[in-house]
Image 1: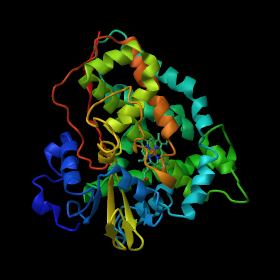
Image 2 (image 1 turned 135 degrees about the vertical axis):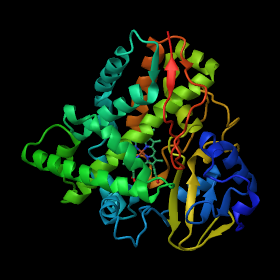
Image 3 (image 1 turned 120 degrees about the vertical axis):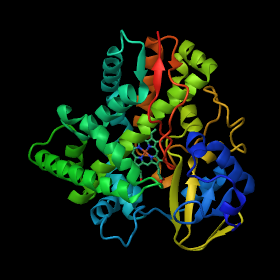
Image 4 (image 1 turned 45 degrees about the horizontal axis):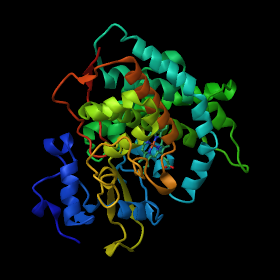
Length: 402
Ligand code: HEM
């Protein structure tokens, strides 16, 4: 249904209300149509809030991924070239090839081997708060954990791991739908630093391999094929971005969800064996990735809607995960929810490669925090969400405990 949403909706994306709580806006969109044409972002497009509709699009490879930067701009050439080499923005058959080469090395088994390191890192981080009564979950627990783990996986030396936090925070904004010129300019500066950093590290690992992802990817050869140097570099940068932000947000959003639902918090504290299902519910309830996008490569008819070649399609994962046709009481946090086929990690060929890692880090972080600390409470009544549309991300999460 093609009408301009701005004329019918009092809300728009870029409002304080939206950043604080996007769900009423999604409901409003859905109540008009689950696939709706609107002019809410820089490029007009279809806003998909329905679960079934989201799946139909995500599994149809005629809906293409592409880098979110202006294609004509020379200024962002470096950023564009690197993003062009990331599997996230590739289409078939190039995507299949890249994903195959990387996923042969970045496996659920490799992630499971990291369990002791993740537990040890969480223990160390929590130990620093042994005699304290407050903590900022974002900067004291979630960020250092995600940062140290992804840096270890890639093979970044220990003393250099902390600087990744700052770089990742800037880079994530370059792939959000709100990005401004200033954000892109900062992004370029960080990309240059990261490019030079990884070029050097890749060179070192070529001469002197270690037991890390870079060394394994250099060695990895399948059916006579291997990653080019540019693809290896882009993969490292993608993993730094993807491995940081979303996991930090999942851990922080999960703890906030529990603090706002004290009965659920109590239940999880009493029954820590519920942690796996609980993390799936946190993923559904406050999805770290709220939106992804595709572009139609031809005219495509889905769910009685014709999407024209070249149309942008915005898939609101955070809305699909609260679709009442699929999830009973969707706005309720229920850590024992029986069926929970959420789309927080996407769906189809681009399904998140890091899902096992994100799940494991979050399970360990939350279980350990609940086991060590009693009487967890929010320390500030007003929390600020970052002004991002594609990601659900708190600036800070101050808490108190006994
Ligand atoms: C809670 C944490 C995470 C969430 C919510 C998340 C979410 C997602 C989503 C929604 C996609 C699909 C995007 C699309 O189809 O357009 C995706 C793809 C991807 N994610 Fe994650 N992610 C998380 C953590 C991670 C981690 C820890 C890593 C790696 C260390 C990672 C690596 C990737 C990669 C490489 C892709 C691209 C896969 C492909 O194109 O084939 N993610 N992620």
